Amino acid sequence: MLGRASLATGSAILALTLSGLWAFQVWSQSPGSSFRGPDGPTAGALQSRGSTSSPANSEVASAAQASGPAYRVADHTVVSPILAALLASARPNEHPLMPAIRWAKQELENVRRIEDYSAIVVKRERIGGELSEEEYAFVKIRHRPFSVYMRFLHPPSIRGQEVIWVEGANDGKMWARGTGLKRVFGTVSLSPTSPLVMQNNRYPITEIGILRLVERIIEVAEHDAQYGECEVTYYPGAKINDRPCLCIQVVHPVPRVNFRFHIARVFVDEELRLPVRYESYDWPAKPGGPPLLLEQYTYLNIRLNNGFTDRDFDINNPEYGFTGRK
Image (cartoon, rainbow, N blue to C red; front, side, top):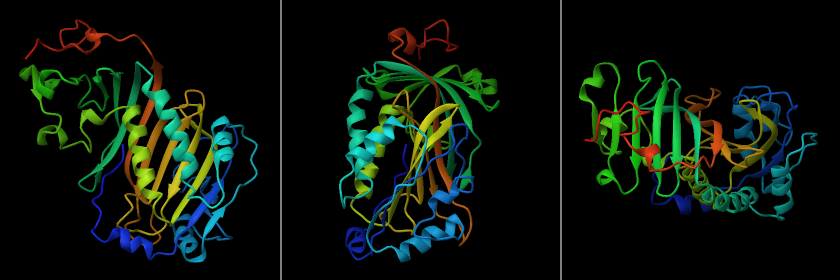
């Protein structure tokens, strides 16, 4: 799930006049460590060309110092088959995003072959300038036809709420059941993009899922690959929920109208070969300040190919709390 920002009319022309920064780095964490934010213990990997300033400042300094493509590989001991494939595909003088784009397109076909999966989705988003608390939901997702069942687990204010959306059903609307005082309304049909639904969401339910995430990542990466001022860093040995992951970090050091984010990270599960976390940050509100989290989506406890049927996406399923078809 990636933030969408409209491009100014002259952005393409502007980008051609900018001196490009293309940086390619590899950094390793110890096998037992967990990845942290931009001010965490691995932030030193962001420093390039000898900069010793803080990460937030070094990124800007790097843009001024760099004059062309810079491919750098640091020594590491963590074994990452995904990273090995990325490095093997790298070509001289190409944009540093290209190895990841090629790999993602290859894996996209594998994701499309997945029939269904269940997971715990953890979401945090900045809406209207305010960063929400984390929301947890159990989900069932089927690819054909695209179908979603959600049951919210946290925070307590939404615990127990349920949602079902099935492509081509219910006139494109989703079924929703509230809790607490909202329970008196029973099961209601709502447009996924209605103001009521979207007031606390950056994206509609139709955009949920790992498949859509991979498609959006490729879309944005291909857009960004048209421009310079892009640093790509790989962190093998990062962990999400104690599962080994390769973290792919993209940094745009300087704010430009053609970039949607300052920092983006994709965590790819080494065993599943699926992205299990995406997060993006805006530029600091003031010089030297921390990057601002825009959105973060994490998929935990993924179980693939469960054999879900129409019953799993039916409000009349007795295992659910819906109160009859509306």
